[in-house]
Length: 141
Image 1 (cartoon, rainbow, N blue to C red):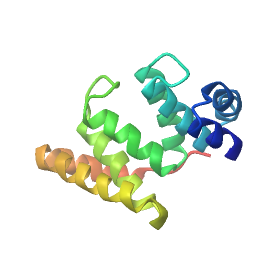
Image 2 (cartoon, helix red, strand yellow):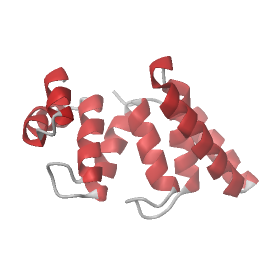
Image 3 (cartoon, one colour):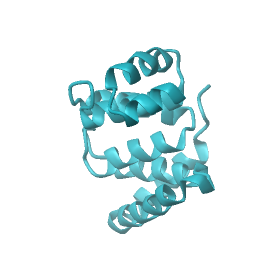
């Protein structure tokens, strides 16, 4: 993973892809998330928000906070996922906030702001539905 991350930082996307793709296919949540980010940005691959969403969702379902935040953003802000779904967005961003470590303080703080934006436009029924989805959620292994 470090080799791929270093290659990514150097913009050697071909090397990053060669490491992350097989790991993502094996179910590695971090690799799925990082590969999803490459598809999101179009770095070393054709920009494909649908593929980014697919990869983020796979990692989010395993409990990977960054992927949960990313898929929540996509649902809530209409980025690459039809249809727009504030309930799913609220669920995933809430789960991300609860899973971010102190190492990810900036991401957590942004997620808290995004969640407040979502909550401000949701109905009480939607918030209740989202809370029920959060309570029912279990990570997939």
